Length: 577
Image (cartoon, rainbow, N blue to C red; front, side, top):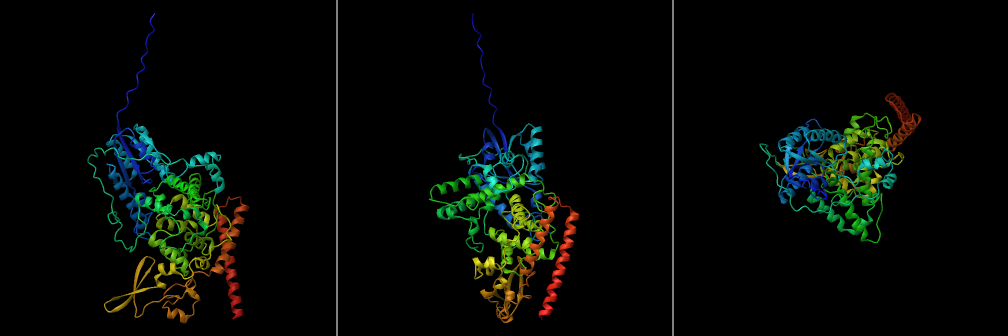
């Protein structure tokens, strides 16, 4: 009897199809899992970037030139990233297709008309991207389009860390480290060529636009950030940083010098991580390679690897915390009755608090879109729990707009930390707006560079000597017959203490050429500590469930106490007089 033969047919492989990779962050070629997946078994690849009005719509009412959410420095940096990405794609036989409009509308139209069967984009953890991606995935699912959305902006998947912790994000760095373990290595594949771009139909392809073409009106910004955007620049900076093996091995965050500006005392790689021009996994691996070649090195939390882990810590906390970007409804945030004194906020924002160390940092932020992390600590503490007692959300908004490395999770997390609203609670430890900067830069070189009012230059125009003073990123031209000279170093951090003869000789009269201090630090810091203590007590008494009426009641009490303290000081001064 013959045994029947069963023939096993191999399924016919599907023909190569069209793929679309949607760049958002992750503006790089190296270690890009979304791109790596998009090119597999693909006939045509459409690499796109959408200029999203949510981030880029012009806003002429904002306090600085730019969009509704970003100043010009970060927009310029992003455009440089896109130009560099387009160049890299071009070397691989492709190009970046740039569109302008609502991402959902643009994307759904392209997916249909280009007959795309595979959509790839980097997973986004921010609330805006979470909502956006749900809509995109819903459309793709209904249309039979495969979606690949890997986590590649961070070392770890925040959802995995939260799951390991029983459904809640770890709230301490050490607990995060224990849960996280070691990250996955970066991709080792090198892309030598890309599938060609298919027929784009009647669409008008935009090249990467300029600042002017984006419609931000007459640009009054005289100076842009000295840091250029793009993957090429990121890898160049990384190579330069890693070249100093001993510097990398000995890096210890608290010991950086915030006054160094011509050659910052850090890597300045944060903007490149923010836009994904540099893979955090690749950066991590490069640091580990350096550590293997040295006898000893610093460890987390202070090492460079420690800084990458801090980044993931805040991403995880943000991903797992509702209302992470606000005080109300945020279960991890202390409820504090902050002041509503807009005039103090504006003085801080525009660099005219009367404290040169604080003002110089804020001018650097306006001009460069970047400052050292310890400089950020100084001005954030000064605005909130240190001196002005202004809400951390208002400071956050300024940083969010002006920083080229503004990152939703890290910016919000750091502002809660520095205001002692969450993560860190030692509110009695305050950065002095005078002594902190002085210990790094006793001669005030940083102040003199960013506050030309304390060191001006002259130019000649129509036979008149004119002093050009850059202040609050606006050019002020005042006609005078004399040249401003330096404020003596003895007074550069406290110019209001200089005798009038010294101020006159320096051509810098306090209250005229440079503001008087908006508060007395010695008095204000004591008042802030008292307010923080009472706010903490209220949070403890209510087990963290502090309502609006509770805050209003405490605010009235604190205002009454401050008024009484002020009256007492005035009476004592009269008695002494």
